[in-house]
Amino acid sequence: MNKGKQITGTAREELAREMKKQYESGLSIRAIAEAHGRSYGFVHRVLGEAQVSLRSRGGERPRRRLEESGRAQR
Image 1: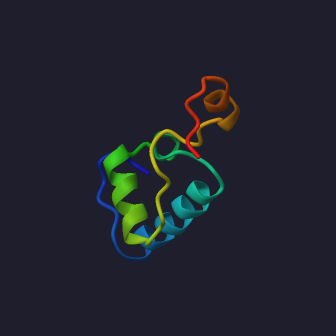
Image 2 (image 1 turned 45 degrees about the vertical axis):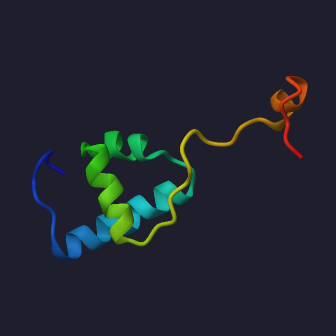
């Protein structure tokens, strides 16, 4: 895709399906944006349109580290 080119209709739906599949397989929004030559905001918006449940920021926090530091909450 050409960067900055408007994507509409079936092309956008197809791109949304592809991005959804990539995101759900573990890729970050930034990685998807880079792979497609699009902005973070564009990918975020397309995933929202595709009704993708977005992960929280920062990924998973290792439980062991928290327990070792004595800050684990129970």
